[in-house]
Length: 230
Image (cartoon, rainbow, N blue to C red; front, side, top):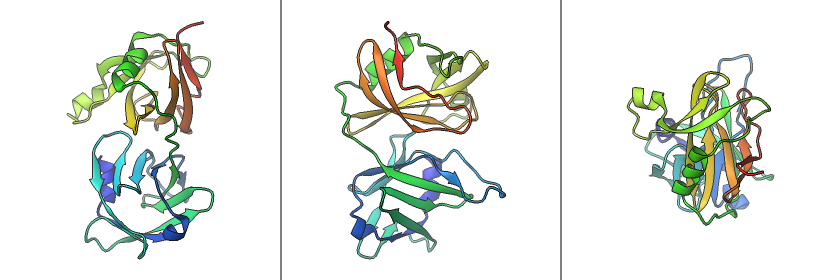
């Protein structure tokens, strides 16, 4: 949530918002570096803007902050801060926002037509209690029920679970996010790589079907399903 709070003291200038009829929940992923010859800060994917309920948050937390969107004046108001950031809406359902740090955030509308008759508890049990095939043809991981050690170390309020990377002898984290009865699996393969973000399309006793949204340049887990049965 800290990264979102950095955004909350900004007034966004929106262009063409009214004409484009921006609605629904949009998430930033597959962001790109603006100037490859200049230092940049990555790892800011997963910012959520709800244009219907006028809130902002992140996929890593259930905390949201109310905002005010004035489509007539093309403004998204956070506080009394005077800084303005261009907000470009493109015909192919994408929005670009430059928050600074040499990284362009790309927002896309989430497809929330994959409601599942389940809950976080069942999904977590499926991941924790089962063993899965190696990902990317050779990386063995375990969805642990233990707390991610860095969240304990820094006494974070929203503690994530540990993802044990047995092949790299390292530890990342994993969590489940629910948005309007749709569920998302987020995890990293070690302590420092960007997040892999998947939307869970279906779940039964044998298989979890996944759609990958965020694909990091390094540490990318390329999978479309997690199976427990032959």
